[in-house]
Image 1 (cartoon, rainbow, N blue to C red):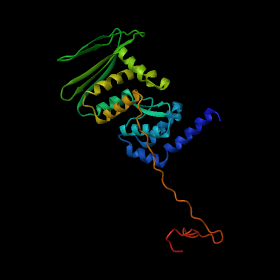
Image 2: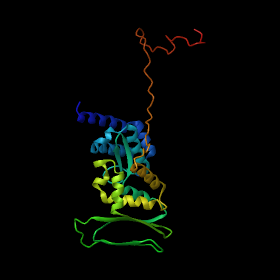
Image 3: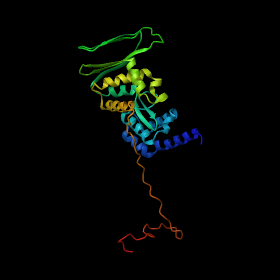
Image 4: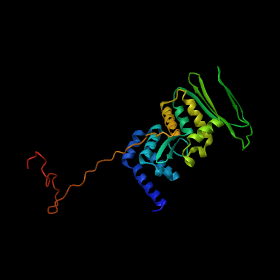
Length: 269
């Protein structure tokens, strides 16, 4: 059987599972915000086509990662809200830059969030202190060959405080090379700027009064970065189907359960 046929069979099997009543019920219980169970299932099927390696992952990890998207109200895929990444046989949830930004904004204690990449030729200066200083003026005309030098994130609080972190290009690349295990499937390959902003936003958020959902997403993302299992597996409740009763071939009537059975120990015959 060719690999293409095997993948088609796996896709059909997962399609049936994702659209099953049991899975739709579980997704409905987990879904928040405007995300709907059927839409999540359809998006997941598209992701399986877009990243065939996901079909080699265990069903438990695939469904667990999808359930995590449902709980956080983030759709996986090219929109950049969240990703489901294959690491060998395990599918893992990763929050995207736009998804983390969405989660940080959900806190009523946050008044502003900004994260940017600084390129060679930009005016950029920063200093810790009282008050802290961060000034970034992008170059009016940026050379297409200009390389990134830094990424930063600034979070303002409703109490009037400011929290910021700055990372150099070398620091970001060191983390990327250490933690990006998914090869061409990694968003680092197609969206370096967004992933750099997400990386520094994660560090800033750990010192800011962000939402519990943002904290959960960051924790799972950190586990994925260092190669730890997220243990997001889930099980689908399968409705119990009773077998049809045996029928007497002579009368066509159902045979009572007790007929033809050996009496149990201690039971009168």
